[in-house]
Image 1 (cartoon, rainbow, N blue to C red):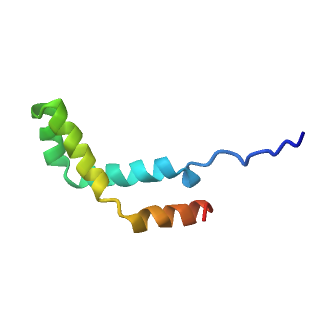
Image 2: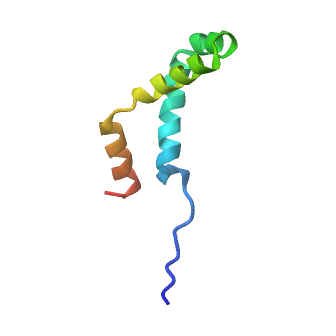
Length: 72
């Protein structure tokens, strides 16, 4: 049996954290709309709004994160 120790956790190398950080940045750019959306829109409309924020993330962004994290 061979044990291989993992490096310490680093949020800088976590792809999910990088993705959500970009999503939150895009939502923050439209903060007035988001404040309105979270109070007046239905749950389904809020879900669609969050999905639209994810669509701002391009394949190039994803590839750059993989490079940054050392996964490529």
